[in-house]
Length: 248
Length: 155
Image (cartoon, rainbow over all chains, first blue to last red):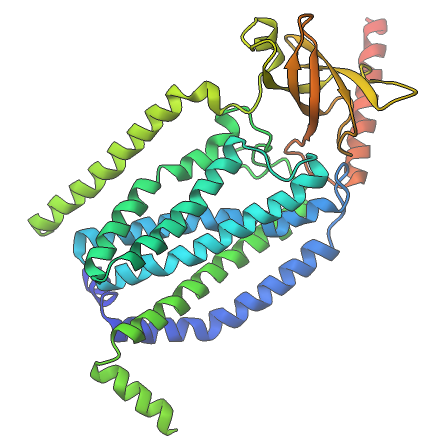
């Protein structure tokens, strides 16, 4: 197990592995996103109260779910980077931040677009929405903090601490609708007991959530590969790769 | 595990636990302010300030919505099934506003305990279903009520 763990610390190994994964995961993800969107938008029944406007759920919920999960990926990478001083963990942490920020932004914007016809307002300072906005700023904060340092090792250390402290926000976002009186409704998908969303609407939603998870993995690996190449540009294996690609 | 790494691991765990409890305690101390609205029972108990902008949320009582014939003025009651607060509002309500549905009204409480609302928002619940399913549910509920009534007479 430890040998596998140490292999993750090797840039050429990770570069080759991510290339092999992306070769099949990327087309599957794009296909799943299109299929899920078509399924959700065209082949599901309208909601009994909201009509067709509820269909934004197929973008809003997956983006929000993966934005929360992505934060844990970033924080765990941060912890690994602090404990083992592993460069690949730094890169993974840094690569998570812009993807997470984009997903959080999508969740906020789609929520706002849905909120206007449903609630009657674009924005309200309720616990769920405000904590989600804090998540957005945390992601942006990691990007900004990382770029603020000249020294990459120091930047990784500071970002790892920030992302670890920020983990407290994730359960707050998740439970905010149960702990406080908020305008945002409680979760419809429940791990225990029955979900309060009809199966005909639930399955495309679960499908879209899985597709967004794959999208996150793809974006993460693509981001990491760019960063690996940039950092390792003076090494023999990257030079070999470049001549191999350039020559053919 | 290497002792230095073990030490760093404990440092990381301490960081997460310490900052979580700090922020947790802060959220606990501010819990009243994080709530978006007052439930009617707190308004009835006098916990909501009079004459200040507040929000009151709950279920719109069935049959309580009265609209004026000549203006956009309307009044309705919201309840949390323990207390009731009357709301007066002039304006357009969201499409999803309705009797038996959740709503959040913001405005000022007057001396009679009536909320003079400047904004009314509809609160959507977590139930999502196709119209046919909703109709079927409604029908079976009516049937069960009927059966309960018949059973009452029979016994």
